[in-house]
Length: 407
Image 1 (cartoon, rainbow, N blue to C red):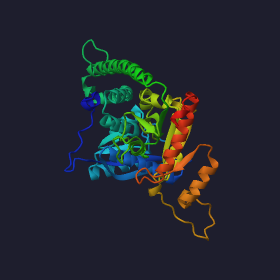
Image 2: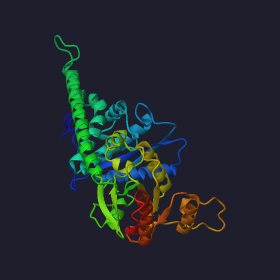
Image 3: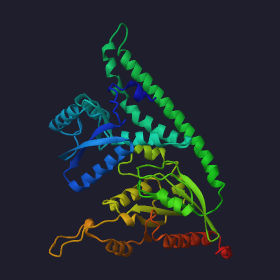
Image 4: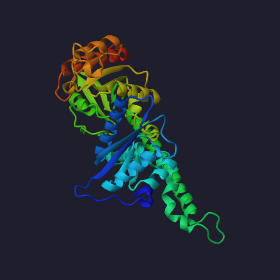
């Protein structure tokens, strides 16, 4: 049990017959933000909640220039949320941004339920999904770094103990400092553990020799693991949930006597917590050391172009932005569009573009090689294998120019 679980001043969640908590989602729509984009972001937040086995009952949004620095939304909106949560006996309110410690404390005073922000929700999912010692260590480190500045809000129940003969701050304040020291010590130990594991993994990578390395990257839940299983004939866990895979999986693949290493990495996401980026940088060494990146995209997602931008930005942040990329548009079987009426003179949107139009535009405008396929239905997989073989062969030939007999 974590310190947060032990010392939070919130009441325990109601145990329901189905064992699932009920939640409301809360988001601020910035003045310069498209409402449709905000709705899609909330769809993603709801998917995160479902991944954490939480049922979403209602969404609350408010248009503001910026979220309130004190309570995130306006006072009237917060009262409306509190009244609705109390009437419906809601267990948790989930906010679509990372809340500051002071925002969290102020909101908790106003709401009759637990408060989670986006970062806390993602951390909870990672904590439940981590399987190996390495992944658990990384997630625990991120969790404690998130927890450290928020410890003071967990001790409001000890305010009555303040004072006392010969004391300046009281037992509550002493307990806070003790907790902070414990958390700092745990952070230091986890960092040392990660350094040790990193050294072991670096040795493992060096033992692989000079084989060509290919890494699957992309937004979470775009089908990387399904594609991995198809190419490598492996059994990597794949599920229609966010962050189904946390651990990097590496498999040796052989195409026509040409061997290479294929790795499946953790998916990226919008507003990925800084703590997780820092903690998972070591896991993403597989991406930084790869010779080729297969960037998998869910072409059926309404905001797939935004997701591409998020992945590119994250690759830049971890030092892998200059790698050669093969862009794979997956899930063509799920792609849908609405054909424009001939009398509709408004500019076409993403919803009005057919898959053929999309293919032509991307193939024409992108310097990056790309392909459209369905890993689930195995559509266009032969072309994908052929393209991948050609790219790996080119890298291999540059590294071993005298091994032409392999091909």
